[in-house]
Length: 282
Image (tube, rainbow, N blue to C red; front, side, top):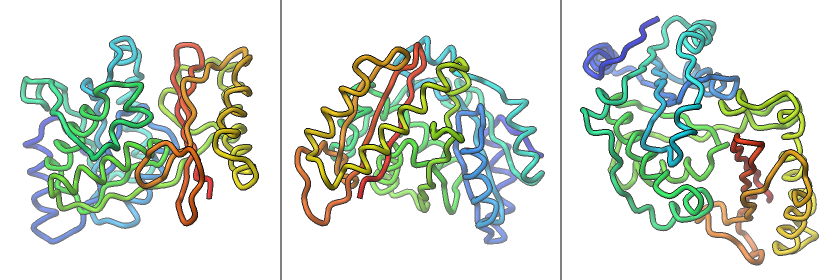
């Protein structure tokens, strides 16, 4: 399996793939791989001739230095895990300064308001960092298709807007959330949870499921009030936000409208670990 750190090395290998008009599937990750990531890689392997997986903890999308420092880095294990799927996967694991050509800095973007909702309200500048690195990765790899998980649904919508704005010739594919047996959305951050926190965090999924079940019967304000009350006295979990939003615009909804898809979004703290999740409601 090829593990590359330089853009020039990667592009040299991929040039042969492109010369032979083969399709390239791309799965960008920050490492600490789990079954959710592997589901994206499996799909890419099924649908493409060549597959690239990037493993890069991108500093520009962290607005908390401690969070960046504590983010799990497990490159050796990640490569071994990918090797169980295929030895033909190309792994791109650059160093930050080299990848950013010495200037580790975000560009500023406008995504028609998508960036100002939910995560954008609570993590200032986060999506500028995400968009900067995704744009650089897509232009470096030049994939036919790129795969992203729906756990970061807002990020997925922003990336779709990004390729439209920058006219990047790639198909962006969203893939379903992969969950632990207890319903917790798989995330690299889960590795930082204690056994008790992981057990208690199933409450997030249970709450979203309850909202989905009651969506047709209760108003959006009542559903929001219900969720807030559920978390108010929870011993292990602290609610940062809960919102029901229009799935396309991501704008917070106050009342339901016909023929409009809605999705519930939630961010919760389990001690020092921040967890996000979402669920389609109709």
